Length: 165
Image 1: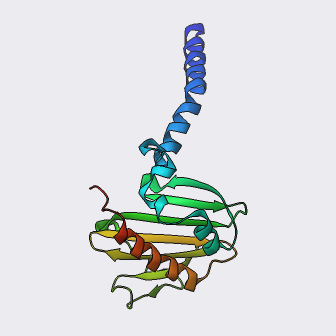
Image 2 (image 1 turned 90 degrees about the vertical axis):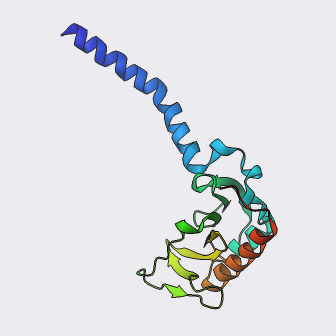
Image 3 (image 1 turned 120 degrees about the horizontal axis):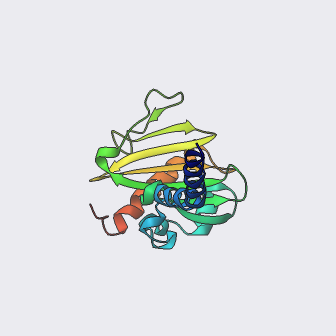
């Protein structure tokens, strides 16, 4: 019995001592920090902090990797102010067509959309072999601004060399 208690205690101590570093590793992988710094992320080059802040309607206080390195997130000091640009292979393009408020954007592309999401907006479209998705929240977030952001991200994606497959 004492041996069992000792083994359980040792395993518990081992889990506690390595739990934080494992959690940090998982968080880094989810954000994409394992791939490098946010400043090196291709999508972080799409917008300056001032441009991102103008879309959100508030100044940027933090720029981070997001979506396992396939995106970049600009955040404001408020809980709601954020902007995400994500570029993934076209096969990953999903349209939440059953979501309330979903709208197709045929002037952009036959698979382009915008939809209200989590207090902000989400828009996406295809550009060649890639899908580009943007999410916008904050004081300046609106359907129109999110569509503008999507169009701008698509233009800038075309101007930056293709992502590696």
